[in-house]
Amino acid sequence: MPDYSRESAHGGRVAGVDEVGRGPLAGPVVAAAVMFTHGVPDDLASRLDDSKKLRPAARLRAFADLQALPSALIGVAAASVAEIERHNILRAAHIAMQRAVMRLPLPPDLVLVDGNAAPDFGCMAQCVVGGDSKSLSIAAASIVAKVIRDRLMERLSARWPGYGWERNAGYGTAAHRAALRADGITPHHRAAFGTVRAIARSLSPADVPTRSRARSAARPTPKNAEQPSC
Image 1 (cartoon, rainbow, N blue to C red):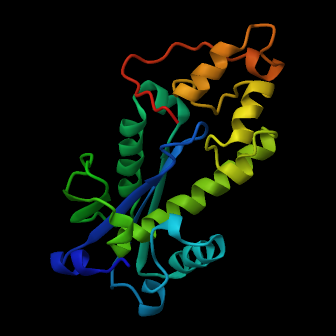
Image 2: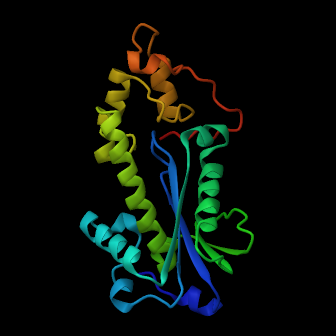
Image 3: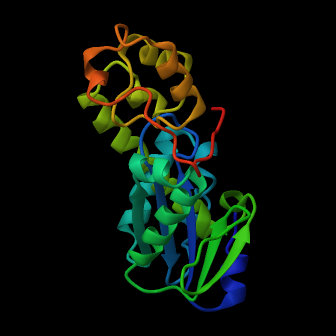
C-alpha cells in the first residue's frame, strides 16, 4: 500500500504526478498532479492506491473525496493525439505531466513522478518506479487522471459510436480493432501506432468508410514517433 513517507521526509510542498493513456489506440494522454498541503486524512489514505487496482466504485469515491478535500491541490492536463503523433507517446506524456504541475494552485518544491524518467518541472523531481503503489500523492494523481480520462472517452464515444470507448477507454480490445476495420479511423485515433497503422494500410480506398476519408488513413508517421506494438 502507498504511504506518505517520501512526502514527509522532504518536509516541503511535494506533488505526486502520474499519467493515464499511454497504451490506447485512441484519445489523448491525461496527467494529474496532486499535492496535499496538510498530509492525508487516515480514512482517505486507506482508500488510495494505484487506480488500476481499485474497483470503479472505489475509484470514483476516492476521486470525489479528493475533490472535496480543501488541502488536496489538484492539477489536470492532457496532450492531444496531434501532439502524440508530432512527438512520441513518452514525450507527450511528459508534456501532459508538465502542464498538470503548472496547473497546481501552488508551485511544488519537489515532484514525485511515477516511472523511471521525469521531464523538467522547474523544481526538484524524484522518479519512483511503481510510484502509484508507493506514494499516496502519486496514487491520488493516478486516480484523478484515470477518472478524468475515462469520462473524456465516454464523451467522445457519444460523438463517435461503435468503437466502445465508453467501455475500453480507447484501448485495443478485440471489439475496438474490429470496429476500426469496419468503420475506419477517426481523428481521435493514433495513426502512428502500429495497430492503427496496420489496419489503415489493410483497407483499400474503396473500403475506407466515409467517416475516415476526410483524414488520410495512410497519414505519414512522424520521424521521431515511437511505434508501440499495442
